[in-house]
Image 1: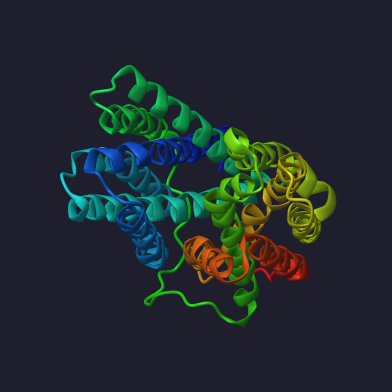
Image 2 (image 1 turned 90 degrees about the vertical axis):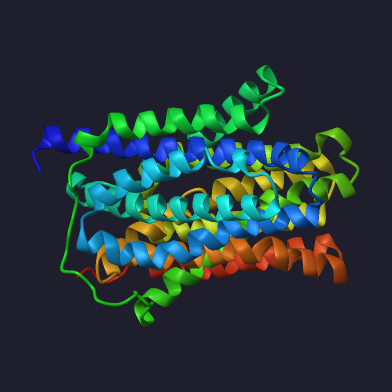
Length: 378
């Protein structure tokens, strides 16, 4: 690909990552308003959240095949537009069943764009010649902040519209961003089609394990960090732990490409897993709000570039780039599903501090599997 076209493809793909994050942030901000609108208990709301994750897990393996039969450029464009427009559906749901159906559609569209854009980005990274995957994921994280803020602001300006304003505005903006880069995305890569769903071979199992554990920890941070600080007496500052985690992750991803170029992907995963383990150990040992928040910031910084490194490695080792990313992403989303549930079970039996200790053990496992991100190229 000519250098000018490659630069345009990188910018357009970065836009898709940002738009995806924008939608995810808006979705997260709209959840409480959807709950209030339908008068849902926490248990009933969890069914809708489960439907979202289930949609992603179901769609991801199939997208690995679809991208190889079409190409990563067109599936990225289609997935990005489908996800943005699917965000218009949840506010129209009049009951829990319809909300679960809408959430499943949003999740399936998100799984489609997630696999496609990461496979497309991995191809751009190979032609670019230096590590750039973290910059794409930084755009996603920044989009998440922007989406949450924009969704909350629009909902506050239109209280009667609530979730409708909070999701429709970011959703339409995300669709516009994706559409604006449609021509610049290019067609991407279309290797020989695979005739069956991709399953991880021995060389990919470690990559899938890293993705699963890493996103398990991320999911647990999202759902349990505020509860942990609240139990520790943080009061209104209970959200500080997750804010510290998220901001540190964004900072890490903005610097990630330079770090990967300097120490290599295995070094990033080894150091990142060790840093996350240290942060979780600090939070478990000193549950005071300031110390625990500092620990959670270390977790965010440590894990910030693990998933980008895993996706780059999976794209090189899969039957096709999309199939490789689909394997790792499916394992990751499975971890995202299991994490909050597993920590909740441990917390019920042994206390939430024990759950934090278990997460620290998971981070140690990530560090021990660091060599997995240097797979044999095809």
